[in-house]
Image (cartoon, rainbow, N blue to C red; front, side):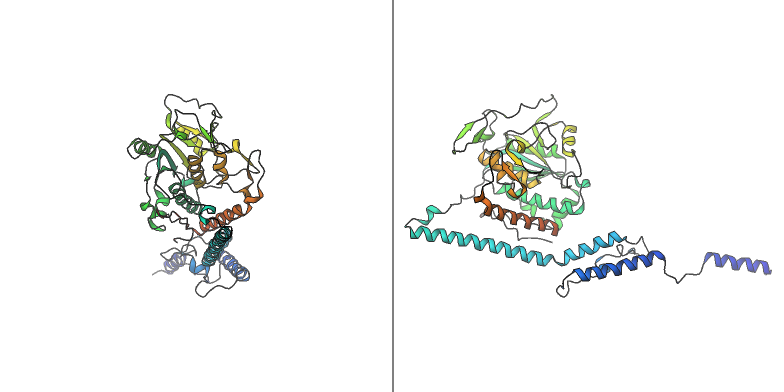
Length: 428
């Protein structure tokens, strides 16, 4: 073989198989340094935990998060911000059991405080020669009383929410069912666009507990399909009782301060509607120029099931106009004096409307749901100091619910017999 040909072949081999450098790259050095710095920061800020709870970021993260594909090939390394988020998530997960124990202790303290107050009332009544039953507030036995009104929660906003916001929404849906179920009058509850990650979470993490819910419909189609099923349900034999409050042929009734009832005229004019607008559906959205004065029989009220920290504006209103249904907003501005803008959660909207079905008074319905720590008071009234203890208790319960949302699994156990709220029952 000629020498020049041999030399040419040798050059081809060298070009195809360049020597592997043993020197570490700048990217790997930067990543390793960032990991070491974050390790030291976590160890300094984190108190000692039980054996078995300490985790290492590289072990908690899957191969893909460590910069390695499952097949073993190298992938894009994590950035410094991604590593920080991973560390924070690890710390949060590591203290989950501690937070649950604290919430349990708080619940036990509240229960003990209520028992002590009850025992004090009984002792005082006996000392005064009064029947203790007359001083104790007797709880009315729960009874299923359906009314021909439907609440539809539109779950078709998954693409606008982050993973943790979907977790929070699932908790709000569970509370929505609980609040409607234990109310004096039960509206028909429907969930539209029931699919995707939200449905998967209920079927896996929450162990398909929603399949045991009563008087509830789940629909893969949009809110119009759910409204169709709701109309059939409300017009059927199990549709429920048409209360005077929701009878469109009668003037609205509100609870007066002396406990009686008085007729009132609508606060706003009826919404001008085109011929092709579906009058049986009202989409609740704060962007609507129309204010809801009352709930009406054989009507479906759609609530946007979205948790987006107010990033997206006007989604529900645009959706309602696109599908040609009526829109309205709750009359919070007509009854409440808010120190700041307060965004209602999905379950709070359901609870407010369920309260209105019982009392017919929007002001009372708002006050029973919106905590005073948010700066909410009835217009023309100052906050009453005598209700501070009750509001503090409500605040503690809300803080527990917020923590449960962040933990990713808040469940409400609804017993048809007692209908007692149990925030401690959770699923991971």
